[in-house]
Length: 93
Image (cartoon, rainbow, N blue to C red; front, side, top):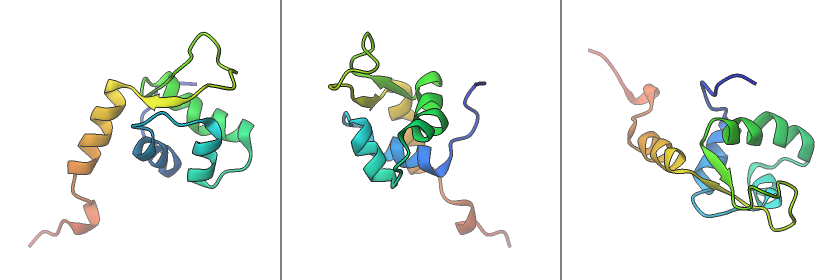
């Protein structure tokens, strides 16, 4: 997969909730997904590859204790998004 250019709504939801470590099941519940393979391939792996998320047990990707948390870049991205006004709110005279 190529570089992460734009986050999906689901990925933004993950970013909003991953400032504390979360298990895959927690992230599935938060986003409303039930299909683990699709969720990992389409939403989680691009965030990992893009340096937005990191695994808490990187040497054991399938560990039962595995959790996902924002990197410093992910925290910055979350903070910047919170400061950006929505386009719908901007009006020109």
